[in-house]
Length: 77
Image (tube, rainbow, N blue to C red; front, side, top):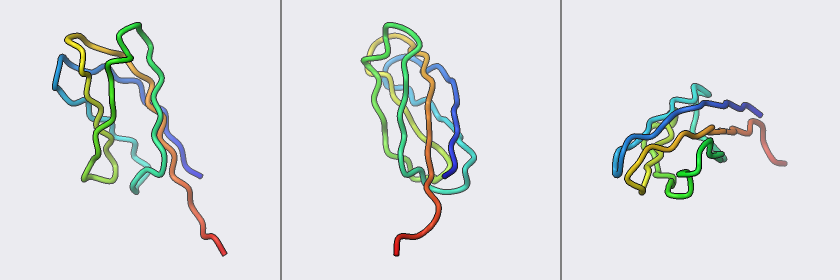
């Protein structure tokens, strides 16, 4: 399992926050933890690039997040 933790702040409403996780493949799981009280207005947006997660703030303010990304390696037999 590979994992990454990145702290970023979103812009204002409708502006995407791009988080490059550097794990080299599409994330199997993504989770974020808010670092301020405006975080509940934040949601995940699908990404076409396997190394980037896009997060959008739906409130009219910035939100600071810790973004956790996991990639599982291996096969199920």
